[in-house]
Image (tube, rainbow, N blue to C red; front, top):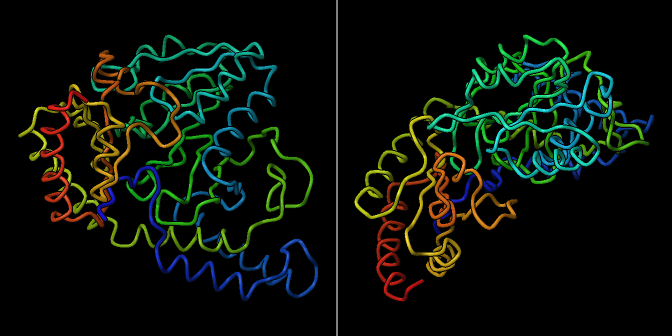
Amino acid sequence: MIYLDYSATTPVDKEVIETYAKVCEDFIGNPNSLHKLGLEAKKLIDASTSQIAKILGVKESEIIYTSGSSESNNTAIKGVCFKYQNRGKHIITTELEHSSIIAPLQFLQKQGYEIDFVKLDSKGQVDLEDLKNKLRDDTVLVTIASVNSEIGIKQDLEAISKIVRQNPKTIFHSDVTQSIGKDKIDFSLLDMASISCQKFYGMKGIGCLIKKEGLQIEPLIHGGKSTTIFRSGTPATPLIASFAKALRLVYDNYEEKEERVREINTYLKEQLKKTNVSINSNEKCIPHIVNLSIPNIKPETMQHALEEHDIYVSTQTACSTGEYSKSVYAITNDVDKASHSIRISLSYKTTKEEIDEFMKVFKQLLSSLNIKGE
């Protein structure tokens, strides 16, 4: 098998699985219980939270555990807007956001909120002057992802934050899902940030929302004691402990891993340039994602053809529901390219031999599928 869909989800690290299994066996108590087993579970959660906070450079009290980034995004957006309705009903975002950002914004739009999409430059980065012009006294929220999940465009969070900070009542949220383990985020630039463990070799079903201390939000889930008043529900001790383990492991030898991905990215692009595809990812993108458009071949057709060879890529993001990639269209202004794009996502685990085999099969399919008129 050749797996080239790491941005959709990553395989769980064996050490993470071992931690999860051990905690399931050894820490059976409800961490809300006051007996010995409950206190042991709570102590482990507190130790895990402390480790996560230290790695990310945030306070322990700023971590809200969730089921993943979709819940974190919804909690951040709805939680802020419901809590601070008196500040205004204007929100700024981009055309590059994940569906778990766009959908809650569309929900709020029906509640009377005004959604503004900031312009992007030719490389897909936020037009800072346009952001400055769009920022208003009644702008309650700016939500802009650190890295786009389809093309890999990395935004300048520091520059964006400086502009947003010009209005002290505006809250800055970023979905940093595609950054953790691939980049180092300065969380002091943000008021809130969404994270999902499944993107860095951890378990599915666990993530967190980083919320700056002092910022209030309206919870989505009420009732039941938890690690925080902002998200109810019995804390998932095994998932939280495995979260800490995955985060620690992914940042071990970080520079070496990053260099490995850059080398594989360069090699892949060199091979792709020998074909007739268009590479949509540019120099402003993280090296882990290579988005390309294939003329005359439907992305689903190519995806399933590759699957027959046990090679796995994505068409759009795994959670996307559109007929074509809104992200690719946003930077190319080309419906044809947006309708024929696939995403190859890499890892430090990806080998040159895997890329060679992928390119061998890919070239064969480019020829055979074109002949069939796919």
